[in-house]
Image 1 (cartoon, helix red, strand yellow):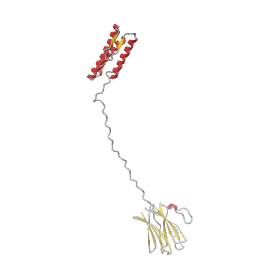
Image 2 (cartoon, helix red, strand yellow; image 1 turned 90 degrees about the vertical axis):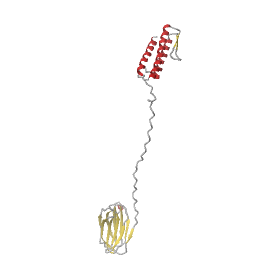
Image 3 (cartoon, rainbow, N blue to C red; image 1 turned 180 degrees about the vertical axis):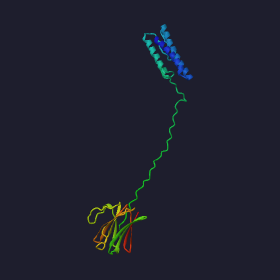
Image 4 (cartoon, rainbow, N blue to C red; image 1 turned 60 degrees about the vertical axis):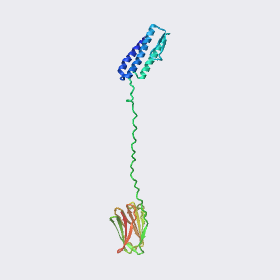
Length: 271
């Protein structure tokens, strides 16, 4: 009976707390009505136990708990059932026992679904145009000259707007010549067979034959370092034949011409 009195007092305390927690008049009214019904049920149970009536009917809900006056364990069952009612009250959110009140959000407070972000326009990365290297020109072997015998008297170089020039001057006529493309790293001495270091990344091998013996021009090495022409090396003049190595900056097809008075072989390399 003492537990039921405490429970009735606790319901009364919850009624007072509900007035301070709940701000909505409708929710407050519903909570007070529910708490008052449970408090009255507890008070009726106390009164019934005091008068020791054989049967007490709870007036709180249509499904009110009926307590039969039998042995003492029935009182314990009544207390447990009433405590279960308190738990249900706190779960419904009318009032929170020993905690903060939980208010039911109104429709205006309900979180509205956030608008999905509009997809931003994808920016494709700009790619720089791929610049393909210029194809290496395929230059044919150039040959010419006559059967006239002559000797080399001079080898000169020069640079001009748009081209670099090599001039081979002869005494007498213009002997036979042959200009063949060759990688400058592959030149070797005609007599020694040793590698000849010629500047440039491309080059030509100039063969001159049918020359007079003994030669008037022995050897020569001209380091030009022009835009296209880098080096001219007379590797050998022997037994009527001369070998001249020409180093270039890159592969280009030359323009070959001849001049007279005196006889000259002119080779122009576009720059």
